[in-house]
Image (cartoon, rainbow, N blue to C red; front, side, top):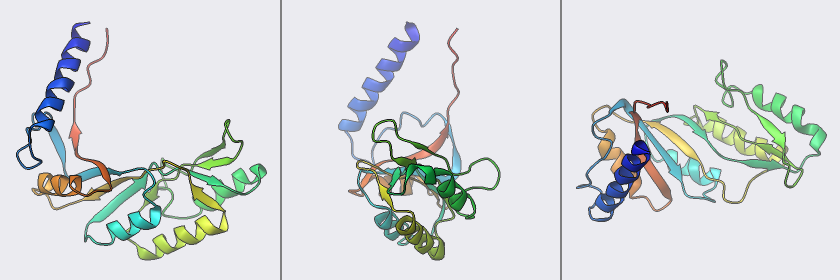
Length: 187
């Protein structure tokens, strides 16, 4: 019970601090924790298209480690699910070759093929074009409300500057440093 109360106080105080300060003067409740140097993670607002994501990342000279959380439905018949997964996993930019391979399922709601890919090394414009062509070929459409989470590598020492910069963009839902926070296990 004490942990929940402490957590709620932490969240409420964070909301009060955020609402009363500008981004530059913001008191960072995560400041006491270490973060991974050079890494910024942000999420776009819903219905920001993958083409808009590509246009956005192409305006910066930063490496993009991955783009994920996009949700796609396919207009192909349901028996095409394995074909789609095999097609994706044959591409070097839709899997990391070790632990993450494309996954999908048949939706229980609309009985359509649903794919949630991770896209790696997408600063490569050939990969971007290939993804757009793949979407067309496999009849993929972003699900309504879909958003994208993007991991950027920015110059070390400039993480807070770029986090604040990204937060100001109208199509960005949130932007954060990749903090290392200890986990407290429940008894």
